[in-house]
Amino acid sequence: MLKRTCSFLKYISVLFLAFFSVGITYSQKNPKDSVKLEEVVVTGSKIEISRKLVPLSVSQISKDDIESTGQMNILPALNTFVPGVFVTERNILGFGVSNTGAGSITMRGVSSSPNTDVLVLIDGHPQYQGIFGHPLADAYVASDVEKVEVIRGPASILYGSNAMAGVVNIITKQQHDDGLNVNLGASYGSYNTQKYYGTIGYKKDKLSLFGSLNHDQTDGIRANTDFNINNAYAKLGYQLYEGLTLTADYSLAKYVANDNGPVNQTPVPYNINISRGKASMSLENKFEESEGGLSFYHNFGTHNLSDGFHSTDRNDGAMLYQTFLLSCGTNVTVGVDFKQYGGIANQGYKHDSLITVNELAGYAYAQHTFFNSLTVSGGLRLENNSRFGNVLIPLVGLNYNLTENTTFKGSVSKGYRSPTIMELYLYAPNPNLQPESLINYEVSWLQSLCDHHLNLELTAFKVVGNNMIQVVGQGFTARRENLGSFNNKGIEFSARYVVNRHLQFHANYSYLNSDSIIMAAPRRQVNLGGNYTYKIWGLNLSAQYIDKFYSALSNPPYTVMLEPNYLLLNARLTARPLKYLELFVSGNNLLNQQYQINYGYPMPGINFNAGFNVRF
View 1 (cartoon, rainbow, N blue to C red):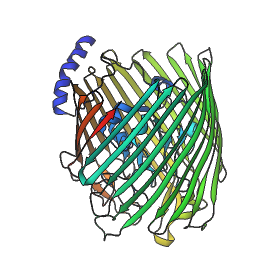
View 2 (view 1 turned 90 degrees about the horizontal axis):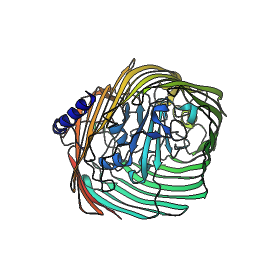
View 3 (view 1 turned 120 degrees about the vertical axis):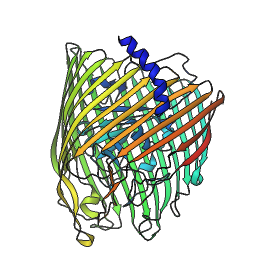
View 4 (view 1 turned 180 degrees about the vertical axis):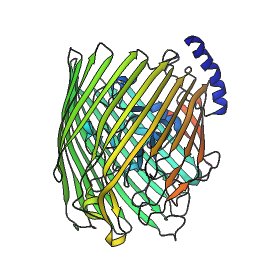
């Protein structure tokens, strides 16, 4: 019966191709049909482990998935492949910063402005601005990414403050095979949008190198909405001994953007000039019965805004963890984290004063498997903030493998976020603010069918938050207070069906029910897509449907707006006339939907771009 069902799925996939979204990628690396039998992740446990054994909900986006979308920045791909996640946009390219900036990530209806509730990592290292406490979305380019892992729900036990709603871990590329690999590409499209990039990878014996240069620019969809960015990245790895590897990297991004303000207000040109950088060094060990690492990171930046605001900031830290793989079926992870963040700003309560915050935490996390099928997880983090004292962050979970192809899991976890320096001292300040917190309850069902060609995941969750920071009052009397609370419930569903190496599909659906109005969090979201190839040709179609979406300016007085539902259809056609050459043309918003995500910032209608990639 199961074999007949799988055969039937292959036939109806043709109809699915005609009526829904279909995507295509072309590969010459593996001429045989292949399916990854077990998805391995690191973000939910610090070490490589089967996703079925992680009690939290973890999604993974591969390099091939990212390339198939043609996205220049990595964050919009989250909307396509991860249920329950929404990323705001306001232009064809460039997220911006400040009151009307985009790039905010909402998970299960939990977010803030700026985006401080979802923690962005690069190779496990926290990435956020030292004063405002949020990531800089424009700094993340797709060409540097090997894969992205997303924890949907709080991960504060492993990553501390800012991981209250979830985690996005961007895992960068690394040369694995001996030899030299070079990738060059360029594209041009609507609104004079241009991209040029080059990457190089090299490996010989114990030494590996990876580097990239990127340049993106656009005139924008309206006058004075142009954007220009340059990114550079370098990564070096060296295997000191068997099982012991040293890695160091450095990145720098510099961008300039203009903003003409919302369309429903008198144009007021606004300019930003921002430099962001990071450096890190890690020593990782991986032995038969133990693995872990020691790493140091340094994030830095300078912000110059045309309204006179100027700041320099930094975010430094050290992370030490070790997992012991015991013979009795128990894994124990212990770790210590230290971070110091802060900076200097020329506006606010403490004018031109260096303000820093220290956080020191220790945690322990253990898993034990009974009867080769039931895995119980539990852990506790003790975090000390130099301004707010100690907080305990627990997690408990279990995973039950009913069969090799069927897994049930559930967890209860706490999320935690300490107030940022901006909230304490700069805008609508209140030095007496206390940390936010939430409790997340979730259960999941994971199912593989058709010899692992079809993989399904269904999750139900409830998130209860309290002590949330809100702005009370307007103008000079505005003040932040711990007054907010929420109760969010919902379901998340995702599916991936690999028919063969030529044709595959993916889909996800999320439903959110909240006791209050939430900005930038759709009540319903549907994403459909797939991959199909024929000889040298490839086609990518993707569709996104958004229902009951509220947008608003982030500064008072609030203008609450329920946006019309919209359906986006995108397509990407590729061809490989030569082994090392790929040509492509992409069309976005092919239904010419009129919609906006940030209030007062209409998104582009039908737009196109075309280009090439050369790999050798």
